[in-house]
Length: 265
Ligand SMILES: C[S@@+](CC[C@H](N)C(=O)[O-])C[C@H]1O[C@@H](n2cnc3c(N)ncnc32)[C@H](O)[C@@H]1O
Image 1 (cartoon, helix red, strand yellow):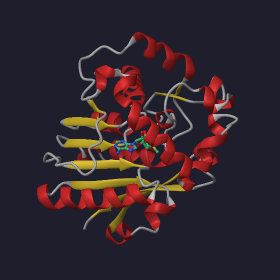
Image 2: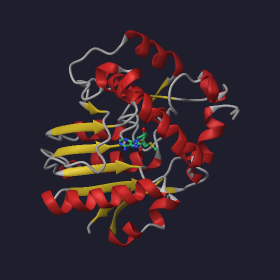
Image 3: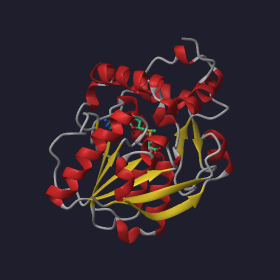
Image 4: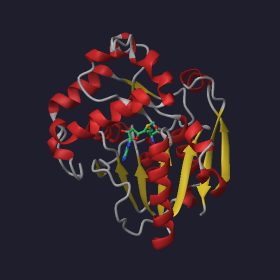
């Protein structure tokens, strides 16, 4: 399949098919791509080639999203792969190179309400660029662990932590969904409900996490179909809603707002 560039391709992904294929590819190759981050990146040096690749193919962004306090390396119109054929991209789909509306909502909420995360142990599932985990650290969390099955996301998070003058976050690249969890105070998920299969497995797993450990779960989402039509919706309580900046609206098929939900089964 020929794609004309990531930015033309990504807005169409929410239908499911191509997105699931991309994630499968990432899963299979994760250990090969970046051996040093299979469990945690904490304290380990970033592979210089990976650093150079990310620096060359992203731009540092300070605006156009809900959290100008956080600097991030993202894919922008000035990057080669904004226009380049997606097939030339040497890794799995670069979802980490976009700051998604769901993550933006959670990050904004933490920065405005630091008491929600202060002194808490937090797991960010599907961290992508790491902005929500970074916001939790900035807001005084006791411990923050990021989780993303894409090892390139884990590498990008090292660079994004550096940009925000913080130590690298511990990043888990193993798939944690469905596994036994530690007693986290808070599990957060930004824009993670993008397929029926994932929504089902997240629902079951999050229910268990809340029932076994009393873990609080917050979900950031701009109204993706697999969240709003899923039975989990009945157990979601709106915490906060934000109007999306123009640039984020354009990048997300015109979604105008994004919501933080509290999952209470
Ligand atoms: C749409 S992006 C959201 C990124 C970020 N939370 C945000 O809002 O900007 C979804 C991310 O989830 C990651 N992902 C997908 N399945 C996962 C899983 N089972 N465990 C952890 N991360 C996963 C993808 O690699 C991708 O980076």
